[in-house]
Every structure is written in structure tokens, then in C-alpha cells.
Length: 296
Ligand SMILES: Nc1ncnc2c1ncn2[C@@H]1O[C@H](COP(=O)(O)OP(=O)(O)OP(=O)(O)O)[C@@H](O)[C@H]1O
Ligand SMILES: [Mg+2]
Image (cartoon, rainbow, N blue to C red; front, side, top):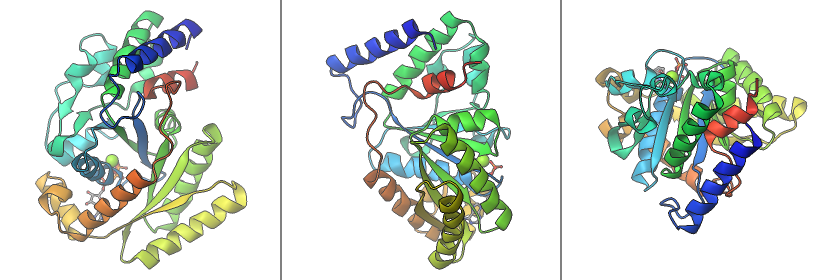
């Protein structure tokens, strides 16, 4: 990003701060960014991201859930909604950022169809600047951005992950999923050494089984990467998840007492308690980071 552009955004943020229009939680401007990703597909990312977003909103956080999954219409299907517009319409100049946001259940906002974010790099400087500013506004209005990425090491997914403050890496106990999670951790932390990595083990029968998966992965990470990763928790294999997918209704709302919903709430509390330091006013927004990290 050009220096002048960065300066202007910084000035906007400082001005905003002086006017006291900070976000609801009292942090400085800019939301906390958490991406949810995995090496292998189909391990439960979208279900985790959607239900966690709703629980965090229930805890008083203003949450924007970004559907950055390359698979067609992932969150749309989980929710049974058909968004009219997506980020590509904004890039094409047909819609404003605010027109694309839809209201999700439990008070969350959703930014649909955001997997093509790197298309932004092809836009001319002026258009890019306008987009960055309107995204900065959006980010300022939220406490949390939860980014549901697809699986694997595509450029767009890696960009989202490395532009986040922390990542929840989802895996199931299958050896292929664990190996792919390792590759993703390696690439992401190489590009962003301050990225906080937490592991969620999905579809297990007990915490012991999940801890075994964590120990296995952590051993390799310590041996070869020597970076800290944390155990966030586990989600049991629970019929309520599949049932809620069929009903197109999030399980934390439809079956709030089921084991998976209890686990989601426990992990969400942990996320809030152990949140990395709030971004300061110099911190860039998600799209700024994506643009800066991909100069070509
Ligand atoms: N804890 C669980 N218990 C039972 N079934 C589960 C659980 N988690 C996920 N599933 C099943 O796995 C399916 C895939 O989940 P989900 O769509 O969340 O995965 P994903 O990682 O987002 O997939 P993709 O990589 O395709 O985006 C769900 O439709 C659900 O049926
Ligand atoms: Mg998904």
C-alpha cells in the first residue's frame, strides 16, 4: 500500500479516537480478528465459526462473521439464507460494503461470499482506497471479526489467516487432517510470527482423545517449528450438529443444551478471557493487511 494511503488511514483512525467514537467494548479502533481454518476439508470449521460467532454475540460482543470459504455458499447453506450480494459486487462498484452485510441469527452480522478478496489487488488505487476506508468503518463497528476460511493452502486462505490476530486451527483425529494442520501452521506462522495458534479437535469421544491429538501435533510443532500452540478444546461427535445442519439452524440456538453447544460456550469463554492484546491505533485493518501482505 502506498505511504500516503497508510498515512490517511492512520489519520482517520486517530481522528475517530479523539472524537471518542471507539467501539462498544472500549478498545481502540479496529476489531479483534480470529480466523477459523484447517488443512483438510470437512472437519467442522463452518459449524464452529457460526456457532461461536452467535455465542460471542450473546456475551455482548458485536460480531461480524466473514464467509471466506471457497466452497460455494457455505454459511448460506448452514443458515438457509440466500444473500443477494457479495464482496465481488462491492469490488465491481455495484454495491456498497454496507449493502452486502446480512443480519444473521443471534444478532450477528455476516459478510457473505468473501473468498475472492484478492481480486481487490487488481483494482486501481483510488477504488482500493475507498474500499479500504469503508472496510475500516465496518471493522470499527465490530468487536470481533470471525473469518470462516476454506481448507488448505490457497493464497486467499493464507492471506486471511496471516492477517488475523489469532487462528483456530480445526482438525479431527485422522492422521491426514493432523498432518495437513501442521503444514498450515508452518506456512501461516512463517508469514506471521506473532499469529496466535489454538487447536480445536473436532469429532472426538472424549477430552482425553482430543488431548492425545493435541500432544501428537504439538510434539512435531515443537520439534520442527519451535513456536507455541495452545489447546483450545474439543467438540464431541454429537448428533445435534448434523441435525442442525439439516434444519439449517445453528445448534447453539436450536439445541442449546446439547454437548456440542456446551463445548462451544466453554471455548468461547476461553477466547474472551485469553484474548491477545487489543490492537493499538497503528494496527491495520484486515483488508489493509491483506493488501500490504500481497503487494504483487
Ligand atoms: N462435532 C460434530 N459432530 C457431528 N457431526 C459433525 C461435527 N462437526 C461437524 N460435523 C459434520 O461435518 C459436516 C461438515 O462440517 P462443516 O461444514 O462445518 O465443515 P467445514 O470444515 O466447514 O467443511 P469445508 O472444508 O467443506 O468448508 C457437517 O455437515 C456435520 O454434519
Ligand atoms: Mg466450511
